[in-house]
Structure formats: structure tokens, C-alpha cells
Length: 425
Ligand code: UGA
Image (cartoon, rainbow, N blue to C red; front, top):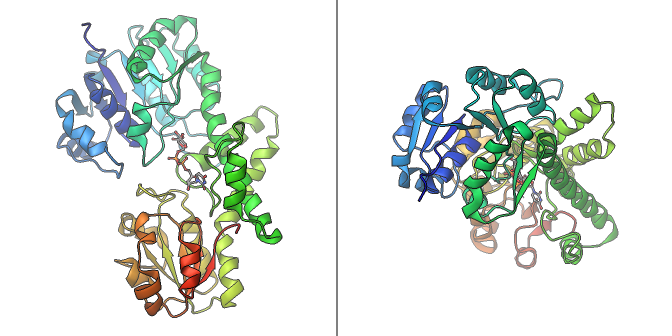
């Protein structure tokens, strides 16, 4: 059997570490480089700094094939396919900041033996502009479609693998395609600009689906429909599909908000006003605040009211609070004069700095004790398992629950004497 192609990974954040560990699991030698020595040291000891189910096991199981380094020369010596996984945060203008990507390109120079395989999310046109400056270097666009919380599973069972390259990099693209063959998902071979657009358009479309169902939820509240039933009925249409039709307090995370803005900005820079995305963003911003009005409906002024926020990350199974609804809500509620207590099973302590004057609690019960209302922000399973009818009801000063993810048992709560407010029902 032919030896497996060694892989280089540049930038060991969430995408880089998931990619490195998954290729090691598939039997490849992987050399992963980060510029932070302390990160490289702790990863070399097998310590995984992020909460991602299955990832620590993968890192530990494949430790022999997985090397971490700060030195780019290690990667260039030992590997030819260099997966670029550095981050591309938004700048003040809303464009993606490509300075880290540029640094990587500079480090690779003009080698014709190496190819940069772009996993970082970059604006459409980035590949073409890099190729113009570095003709010899191979360039392959290979966007990632991993979801936080199920990244390992997503990597091993891809819906599709997208590989974009121009003619001069076709050989490298074949080699990248071969890496994914054993996973069995469809491989989409295309040009670089289309591959870059597939990534941005996919995230923008999913975000649009969420803002759409959130608006249907808001109208359903006015007209007496139940958005869960509406989504169920819509989702059975094959052309619509049931996924990403869960109404709630808006989308967050490091990807959707950034990528929707980046695509809108990219369109604007090219002279096209992408009006739909402007609305998607605005609907989402308002949706994050929607719990405030619901609390006021029952409590009137929120001055001096004790409000418990349950859950901090932008979704369960991660400790990531970037663009999380909880942060907007905590600030907004404090702005209304409420006293905010928060509890989260994994993220509360690390996010404490971002929560302003909120009190960080060690348990859901502590947060709920004496509270005038509970707002469920992140659908962690442990919140459904609380003894709402018993312990929780006794502890709360007022039995009001705003279920921001339509996650709790509405009937059971109402039967137990709670005032229950969901989203769109
Ligand atoms: C998203 C995409 O789903 C991935 O395919 C992509 O690779 C990734 O961005 C990226 O670009 O790196 P992720 O940000 O991990 O993945 O999270 P999602 O599971 O997509 O959820 C995003 C947000 O939408 C969460 O706040 C979630 O609560 C919200 N959401 C999701 C809803 O409000 N309703 C839904 O029906 C689904």
C-alpha cells in the first residue's frame, strides 16, 4: 500500500486542530504549526484547549502521528500540502482581515513543490490574488463545513468536500481529493472563486433560513400559530428540508455573523447591494433582544428584578461565546436596571469578563434562587432535567420562564403553575 501523504497544518485554532487530529486519525503524519509557544507546548502534552466532543480522544489516540511546532521550516521540510487554518476576523470596515493569511503566504515563498490548501474562510478572489503574486506556489481552496460541537463527526461524514483549483494546481487538487476519498462523501471539484463562494453562500443561506423562521415565529405569535408546528409542516417538503428551521433567540458564533457580513461587504465592494443579507443581519440583531420585551410583558419595569440567564455559548456542546445571544441579553437587561445572574455548565467562568456586572453562579439552582424570571438561552440538556415543578418552583420568587430555544416541556411547566413564554408559539 502507498504511504499516506504527510499533511501540514498552519494555525492551530479550532479549525486547525480539528483538521490536524482528523487527518492523523485517517493515518496521515501531521505536522501542525502555531506561532504561540505555550499553545504548542500544551498541545504536545496532549492537552486540548477547547471544548469539542471527541477531539481530546482523537489527539491522544494519534499522538504518535501528530507533531506540534512553532517552526515553519519543520512543516516545509516534511510536508507538501499545507492546510492554512489561521483566522480571518472582521475589520472595522466589515471586510475580512487577511493579515494572518498574508503572513503564511509570505513564509511559503515561491516554492513549486508546496501547495497552500486554504481552509480559512476568505473573500471570493483571495486565491486568485495570491496566485497572481506567487505563480509557482500551488493553491487549492478547500473550505471547511464543520459545526462546533460536532466537528469530528462532520469531518468523518462530510455532506460534501469542495476542492477548487485552477489548471496549474490540478495535480495538487488531485492529491487533496485523495485525502478525503476514504470518507465517501461527494467531492465537488471546481474553480477557486466558486469554491470560495460555496463556503460564504452556504453559511449565508443557513443564516437566512434561521432569520426567516425567526420572523415566521414573531408573526406566528401575533396570529396565534405555533412556529414548531409550522417548521414541521414546512420541513417535510423535500425542497425546504427540516434543518435550520428552529426558531429562537438568533444565531451567533464565530462564523455566521462574520461570514454574512463579509459576503454583504464583498458584494458592496463590487458595487452590488445584497439587500437580503442586510435584513438577515438586522432580523438577527433584533431577535437576540426579543426576550427583553417578553420579560417586560409580565414584569413591567425590570428595575431591580432578578433575572436568571441559563446558558452562555451560542449553542450547546461548545464553550464558545463569540457573538452569543447571552452577552447581548445580559447587557440589555442590565441596561433596563435588572440584576442578572448567569449559569453555564462549561463557559461561565471563562466568559465572566464579558458579562459586565452579571453574577456568575455555580449551578442553575443558585441562579434561579429568588429569581423573578428565568431565560433559557442555550439548550443544554441539563436545563430540561431540572426539577422545575419542585425545587425550581419553590426557589424562584416568581414562576416565569422565557424559553428562548423552545426547548423545555411547555405543558409540564404550565401544569406546574409557571407562566411559559416560548418563541413563536
Ligand atoms: C456554522 C455552519 O453550520 C458550518 O457548516 C460551518 O462550517 C461553520 O459555521 C463555519 O463556517 O466554520 P457553527 O457556527 O458551528 O457552524 O454553528 P451552527 O450549528 O451552524 O449554529 C449557528 C447558530 O445558529 C447557533 O447560534 C444556533 O443556535 C443557531 N441556529 C441553528 C438556530 O437558531 N436555529 C437553527 O435551526 C439552527
